[in-house]
Image 1 (cartoon, rainbow, N blue to C red):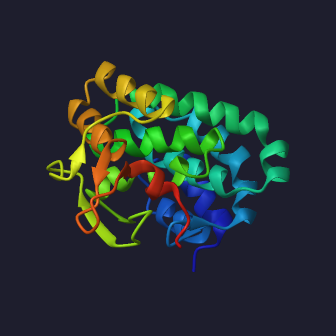
Image 2: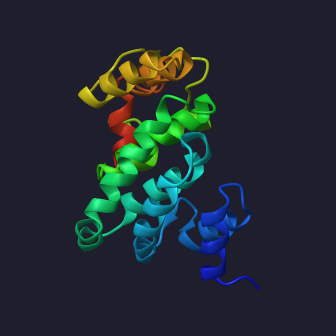
Length: 207
């Protein structure tokens, strides 16, 4: 059985190594990373710096997940590594291998910035749908982001949304930019007719 150290050595030598799967499994479970995984951030910073932008995509996404779930002490301890990884991730955005990966890279940058909501939730864009509760009647609503649910009025409800949208357009990811206008648009509840910002409810803790 491969030890974690052996996996780290193999992964550092080859961005396509199956060892990366083991490192992911050891670090993250069901969308949440073990805060103890923050010890990997210096190794990830060194390793990603040695890979070409197109080869480091998956590794920096992992680093973003780890960073956003790290505790304040670890974020302070590894601040330089997080800054390095953020810069390496921004460099990847211009050559992102797909729209899906572009979203993951944007999310990773937010994770490095410490955005505990969108550093974990932006990839709802890749899922193609979001489930939210109406803030007034508490009706559960499943919203289709891919086709632009008819209940959504497209918009950009925050400065962050405007920034992400501009970045997606600038780097040629028009379909991502479009879905951002749905995620950060306003919607009308089919049950009670209340209109609200969709993103605000995605970001809200379950009631």
